[in-house]
Length: 145
Image (tube, rainbow, N blue to C red; front, side):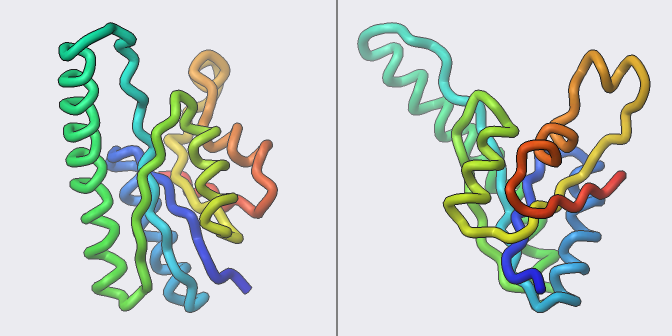
């Protein structure tokens, strides 16, 4: 039985559509949902006050962006009476951020959307869902949106 579902989203319509399905699944399982946003780290490595101000601005903007999208998940969970917690992870690799969050939160399922790109597009762009599926120590539910 699934108890904790990690639900990473990227803010896209496809991810949010997949999230709705995953939250309905969580309701059926009486599971808790952990909404996750992986944020790119601040890349400017300058020195002095400009670097500090830039890093603060980046952190505030990224946190607001993440909260905007996680609040959509929170509202959907509340409507279905599904326990919800949100998390943000700073990582230059979305896959690494998802896998680290799964481990630290103790989630026993990762549910994420896939854009369903195929052929050359999938080969060139890679797939976060495919990489998470290959590297995850827990089951992964991929929801094609």
